[in-house]
Image 1 (cartoon, rainbow, N blue to C red):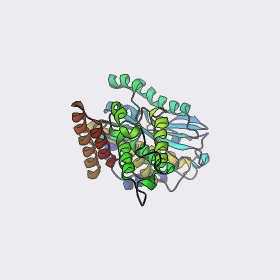
Image 2: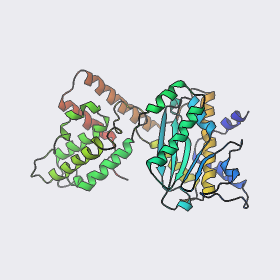
Image 3: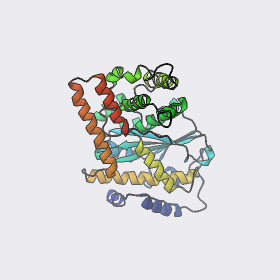
Image 4: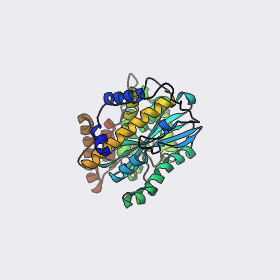
Length: 359
């Protein structure tokens, strides 16, 4: 009966979420204890069924989740975890030092739900290890498909293509390349070189050594653009080919989840649910509890209707299909052998799917 009621209240859009949260807030009286980083009252720390929502309570780290939601996601085809942090919604007590970090799960048919929320004043390896250990423990303690137990310890870690483009575009601007990509000093050689660089994200990694744009700048040493191009190539080598991010950014034959856009969309939803940045901790927990209830509703709907799919805007679906079709076409061509010119053409063609702006 409870699952039927929860599924019945599964809705799309921020308006229904905001209304549900407003009703929930009205149930709390002015005399309710206030949540802090050192103390959370039971009415916030536990869910309506009495189960725990607050699983870690330390002055610098809180971890919130519903064990039932994580286990239900595992039973409904959970195959990918997407995590991202935002610095606008950590409670006022942490001021601007902390972050709200959310781990989302992607299940069958692309249905995505938030699984775990963490508030932290630090962004260290130890903090992230602690956060993901909570999810791992839930997997270990649940009745889930054996394949997930096998795959999770050897998970493939992928970076976000959008954030990659942002990093490259900021470095492009920093070294002075925009002068030669538009305007009076525009160089067609530099433009073609930059488009080839941009498209590398969709090229099989084993072919990168064949890309001429990675070997040297496209202009002579005496050209004014030589220095900026050289500095950008050095940045690629030091940061993205031999640095800590070297194995995180290949997107060839990745047909879904190339970015953390689902997490960004979730952050936009939070904007509609909060009165402003840095809410009180009590308000933040109330919102996160409501979002967990909605996640549970989505998973119950998927469980009852296995054909239920995530809604994707038509233009986004068409863009995804165009990228996949181009990759499939090149993959077929690659099996028959490709030369340097064909590799360059493919990269320049795929560059149109990579953002050229910074935000």
